Image 1 (cartoon, rainbow, N blue to C red):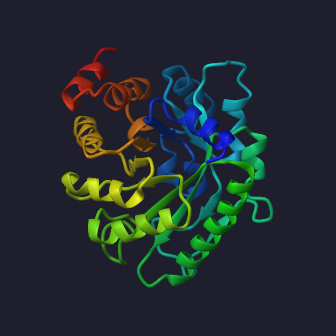
Image 2 (spheres, rainbow, N blue to C red):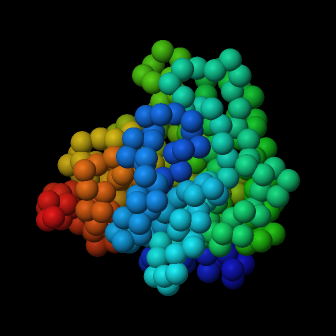
Length: 280
């Protein structure tokens, strides 16, 4: 690993652990994702004050973080792709493209990102979007190697038609392990993945990734359960979380950040983290 890659990884991970708060949901073109993000400037200010390790956004919102004249602020994780896999109804044609296919890393370098993130969708009966994702990762991996930018790959096993939401992801460990392994084979420096249906199986995901493994939050859950599950996943070897709606759609996002930081960096239990949340 090149020195500058290590420097960026050190900005993202504090002693190997990381809470990355994702507010990049505007790229999905899905109204439900924007609940809680209507005033993106205020959301960003509140998150910066709460001090997670990183904040994940798209290029068009990254200035809200990087224009802030403050030394000790969260690292920037920049999403690089956009697709139509998250909408409430299925599409006739599935696609996933990079924001800038000619120079996919340029925006991240301009904004001084600590890492970039890209999806790896596996959707039943949609082989073309899978191929597009592999091509996206290949382009990004080449650019990341050239400019020493850590690459976060998000392998998602999506539900078949008629099972839950149109493109809900699954926690089927038997399907997740091969896809996570593929993400690593393609050159992931960091893997962002769903929790397994049984928390006690998550160590298999960590073993397949062989790199820092962050847990994806998905839809908003009941907070006490989210915190309990987060603590259990850390015990299974997770390096941290990438949570969006499970932060910004709760009543007090700043306290959620404090609770999660206690779990990730100080080994707090779910119960202890909930007590932290209630101290406001």
